Amino acid sequence: MTSSKNKYDTLEQIIFEQGLRILGVHAYQELNLLLFVLNNGKVLRRKIDTLARLRDANQTVLDNYHLIAGGVGVHWPDVDEDLSLKGLLKAEFSMQAMAV
Image (tube, rainbow, N blue to C red; front, side, top):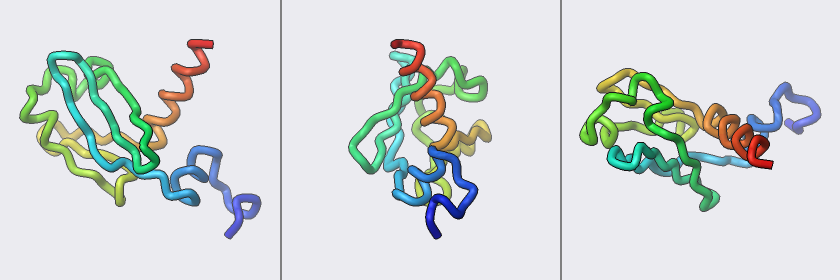
């Protein structure tokens, strides 16, 4: 299947055709910071307090995550929070656009 024949948007092409995945998540509660390490060596950042279900989570809850769909998403079972790689990439590109 080529990208011209499928209905993937640009981010989905990067994720599903090029195989971009989340390898791990590092939470730093004291810094209000989540780091998402990708299989291409890049790191995405999110402020914990921007995520309602994680905002009041302690370090133990933040560290208890599971990669889902082979690294296309992250799930925190203690607070029933899910984040998708696509959503993280959208937020990253949006922040980069605002910085220009």
